[in-house]
Image 1 (cartoon, rainbow, N blue to C red):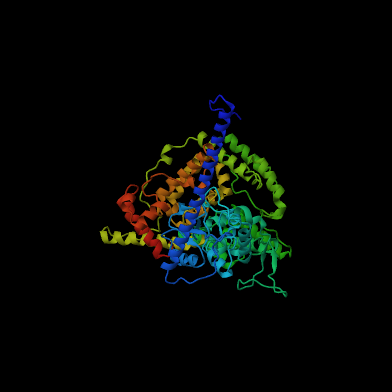
Image 2 (image 1 turned 90 degrees about the vertical axis):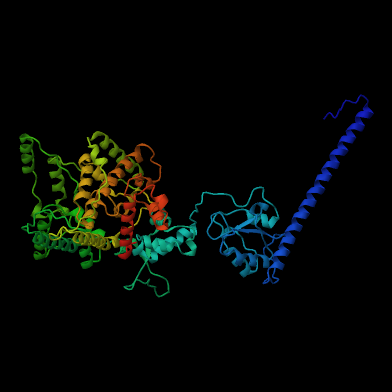
Length: 638
């Protein structure tokens, strides 16, 4: 290195170099001394702060020093001023050698304490360390494990602050996953209950996770690991074996989770359906015909569940929808009776494709061809209706009549791709179809769920008011009988596509879409009861959770419900064509439609923020919403 500074003689140059080096050494030593003095002053200030905290605390008593590092330096803690636990834990920290500071940025080694905020340390770390009289590893008490334990052990100071701003979410640990599975094994019948998962979220092991996130975790990732559950007695309590261990039962052996329908179940279903249809015809003043189409309401399936609780309400409903078609019931009853008479074991109903759609014949030649084709179809053996032996015959008849058959459901591995293809098909069908824009841009009305018409009433205002009150009461009564089977609540943000639509929706897409969209409007217009609304929307693939969301958002206004149901389908199209990865809950964003509510607007209403609320809803709509929510509370539906 050349240290020449313009001196000509060697002696002068050497003297200059020595002077420069000496000055550099002096500066370095001075900097080291200054840094050491600053560090000493910093620790002295902390010590004085600790002494001040101890002296100002009248309850302070000397304890063993726990909250200190290997160099016996006090650990620094920060607790938010508004934290209700600050006073309690500030005293504890001071008593055991720690320091609570008011400025979290005063040191890079500050430990943030909280029981709610992400990326902080739980107060339980303080309690457990004091209980065991030693400084426990902090990683087990943090949402995000850090290297602070190493820093304490080595007395090192990290270059960056201990707590960084994160996304505000917490990951599930293997221990939490195991805990969720064990809880479901102990309560297998509650695995589909939102309230069950909401209760799980209050368990200390799952602290930091919501009920919806736990439910989603189980459905998406853990359900395949369930494998078995614990055997339960009639009282619902788990049963132990002779060794005192809970008895494990394979899922294949569980009646409560996977119970196959028997011929006796199918026979009972058919007989109850006949009785239901007979009573309905009598009440409507119509002649009963056993061969007529039967469309049971939800109350029918509730009755089936009460009479035969081996299957759930929804299982009975799906059994009827997927296995019974026009003419099936009388044939199966006759077939079953004959088998019993001949002492032959009858077969169960074979699943039918209820969505098989025959093309309409528009000319006489097509009608003639259809009749000729039907006459060539092979008759089923021994008049067995839709049982296993008649599968080949049904297949042959399907081919000969050029029936459109829906393809079977895809495997789990290709489900995401299949869903995408199905939704893209929806987009293509919408673009091809000639849909009247008026169906998609209808204005909101004030028609609510209708109730059976009362006797002719006078036109005076008092009678009208009584009629309106009766209608409102009937609405809430219907909701009260319906909602316990599917909670009246908004779709959570953590929901996935399966929470909104089911397999029937994809088969709904395969049909004439323009007519199906029009049918949604008709469903909302013609549904006279809540049960009927659930039944009709369920048949086209809307889940009960989605229907409950629409009812809650519109306050049972069927005109509005038809409008936002169509908007939902349009959003579903955009979900595919524009941004498939966006959150599913955005499919339920309907814009600023008067009379349509969401959880944010209900929150404003509950908090009395009417100035903000009037930017979105009219005063009349606000008053109507108050009455609706009040009715839900009175009937125990809130």
